[in-house]
Image 1 (cartoon, rainbow, N blue to C red):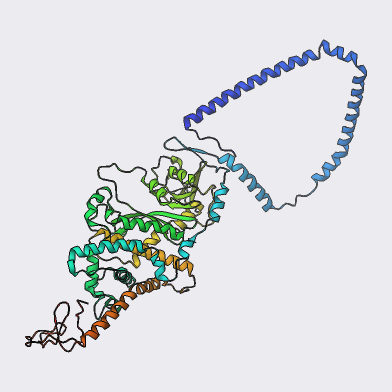
Image 2 (image 1 turned 135 degrees about the vertical axis):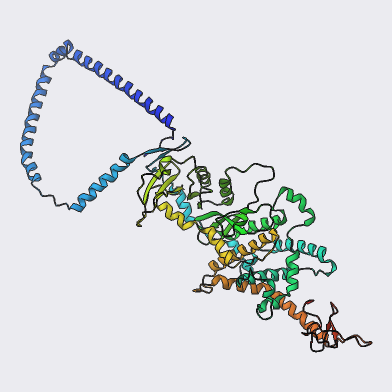
Length: 607
């Protein structure tokens, strides 16, 4: 069935009226031409006909004889065929009732589209929806979807040797150099000459400590309790001291504080923009998403001071930093992200924000199906995605002007009933699951009115949407269970914690798909992955600290208290109670008194 051009109601009425007028004019012309032909025939059988008969009398007699013979043959044939008809009528019809019912159903199915074909006009009177789907199926795009490759890229597979190298793909040396340079600069400004320069081993150990704290679900636990001698974890005390951890957490920075003022006037994300941009550019390089991609919003909980903090009551945290995300619907791999910084100062609110976000998040994709919620879905978005060879499936808000009122209405609807409407590019369904409830979905992928075999008779569009809508929500759930976030009042550090959480999850997806036999059959594979990753990150720091501790112990064998008059009785720094003992050693850094019961030469606070 060839589709016609879409018209408004006024244009459709005018077109129908013009067609009726043209038909009437054509009928009048045909009747006048018939009258002229009849007059010509009367004239032909007049005086001119007699002359024709006089010229060829033999031909007319021959024709009459042939016609007479033909009539006699026809009469003989009819007499011979009458008994055959009677025999056929006596044959019994052995067709079953089921076959008769099936044939009746087929005839009704063939007749239903013509009988139930309806047209609906949109609210803005710019679209005409039809209840019958178009004949175009766009098979070429389906072929592209089937041939698309999904999973880790060749670039990622060639660079993954172990768990640590998988995580290093998302925090490479380029990002580490930016963090180290800015952190060392801030450390010298705050602590002066007492600041010891950080190197990559220190930064990796700090990140490893954050990951291990997330493994033990200690994000809301006091940091001092993690280093406690009795109730704490041994690996925290073995890696670094609590004082060093607090120092790094205080001075860690991601940009130059001297030039931040000028950049912040143009970009609200200036304190971490450089690190964020480099990190986001790495996400598409490591993974090819499958045929279904989910676009949605995330909310990183934060209640401190932030110029673009958002309030979303339906989220668990309610207050925080909103991030647009595009994830693979199957694995929830974060393929693209964008921080929402709000509108610029003095500027107007953004129009068609949902369409702009989806187009930004899906840039570079082809042959995929984009699943989004009613904040993003619109008729114009479907057209823009089709130009990029992308499909769209999503719920629609009831106030959209391109929707027909007949499908939005809830009145006189049976339970579990569905109404469909189609254009050349879009499909719209209105599903009525219960009283005073109406679900609207729009799709550019589905081209027919197919219902499921369930008891509630859900349309195929709703089943596909429910299967792919949770890509971003699953990422939120996974990162919130084992998050490395610590309590802080600085929002750039919150964004950095989120970078670590998403990087760890993406690393787990890559490692699991490259090594499917790793810890196969275990349900806590992600926790085991994070624990092993944290241990590999802190191990170089522990080995370096172990060597330095041995050197200090060897030096203590030859170190004694300085000669001279006996020092006054001082309290040992490590002995409990108020008992005073004679000091046999002095700490090499803070000059604290250490009694002979201890073999160390440098106190734990200075180590």
